[in-house]
Length: 218
Length: 103
Image 1 (cartoon, chains in turn cyan, blue):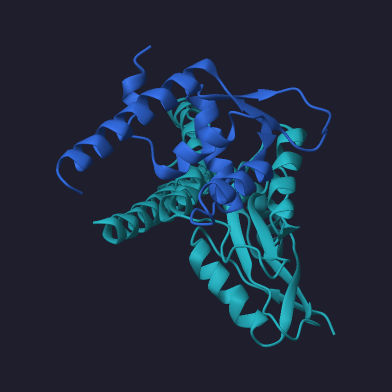
Image 2: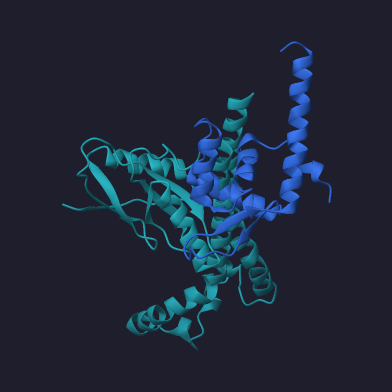
């Protein structure tokens, strides 16, 4: 029986690999990872003599040919591509030949570079959003002080003079629009904050893995 | 261009450049390096892909046209050859110093 599991990981690839491996060790193999959601599809493994290892790389591709060339190099060397698209970032590989390498990276620094690419990706999205938000706030399209003027978000004339049923009806009808008016700016700010957080988290893991490399060599 | 800035090469880069004296795609390079190093240096796919990307950016190798539609084929450039010569001379000198000191 196939088994679907949902788990959300932000930027820690090692943690994600370890989690996948812990399911695999219960006698499964990873069949598919959806590029759109946090859904992992496992199926019972028929392999009796070796445990199918899964490793994750992080790359985005500009051209279709580049993506195909990338996948071919992994498949040639015994690592089957089981998840990820040209633009999804995370690329999942399963060791498909017994004599293939134990990992998709043969040195610690290229392994650490994954986090550098994740970080660059999030931080560049953040930087792309930043000017838009600054312009919207400074021109007053986004009102960030709405918390203190909640009543002003409602445009229905005479709303606050109504009472009873007619008040609640008009009030609740307009509430979704009022929330959009007042807090869409905050939504953008929250997104920017989140992109920045992911970017910095990935940068932290990059330096941590890189340091691991230095410790091995000195 | 000052090619000295590329030195010293890592062992992996040195082997990749030697392998690309003849043109080949990624997996060719991996096999060739294994063979050249008597199975001592094994480059995994993810590391190989990043190494090719860096060498292309540094202009030490370049992509060449090929019949294989699904795999890109690479070859060493003139700069790449010059860097390889500089590095080989540096290594020969080191070995010479070692010899002179009875090692």
